[in-house]
Length: 303
Image 1 (tube, rainbow, N blue to C red):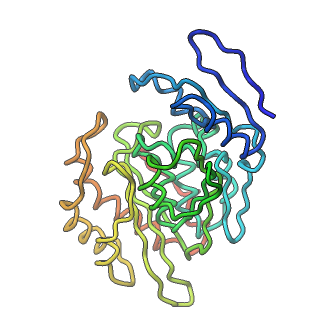
Image 2 (image 1 turned 60 degrees about the vertical axis):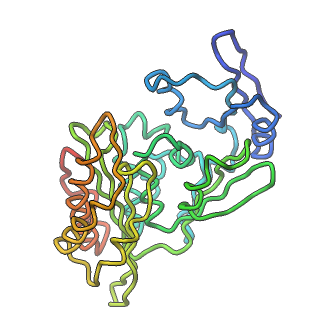
Image 3 (image 1 turned 90 degrees about the horizontal axis):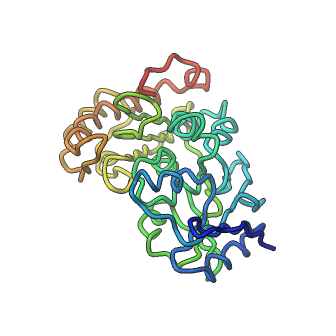
């Protein structure tokens, strides 16, 4: 059953289904341009971006499956889990420190209380979403529901396909099947924590405390038009990781980035600061022997 809010000539219709199936059906049968909505932070800023409201919105707030959160392993996150709830659930889990930092440092407390995991992944026009590079570094998988049923794919594949997926498709779950030994997240804003970050670096490392060697995964966000794994940097880094060496390699590769110009910073500046952020992320990663090394430390004004 789907509730319907009253509409006026100025406001679009808002439907409130209670199951994923109903949500997909409403999106498929609705007018062209109908969109799912969760926290609504992107929609509420439409006027600032000069964007028009859609003809209809399908609220996902009453779908119980989308509120699921299980730290596992595997870690399973429903699409409507907020940044604030995710950060609280990951407290004390060193392997997910990077994701926790991404959730608890993004935007501001009011936004974190309503912004959702699914919304961060689905906002194709928002390259500065903190959770996306953190999930890329964790090799996370996305489940989407659509007119053809459920499909699962790596986050990188979802980012590449999200604007071509059939109408009515929505993110339902994010899964991290194989947590790393530790992870970290670094971001830079120019003036205050509530701004969009100029650049983001997320790192995950599979090296265990017993000396077992593992790979390193590095993802960047807000630098290019779409967040991505920085495979070129991953391939050049040698174990064990050293912050200064990682920053030096990042500097040698920074010119290959297709950095974007934006109102908050030009592309050349994003390229310039990336090596320093790589160093910060690796420093935090190499200190991560237990959770006590992480969020209780004094943070800089840019965190």
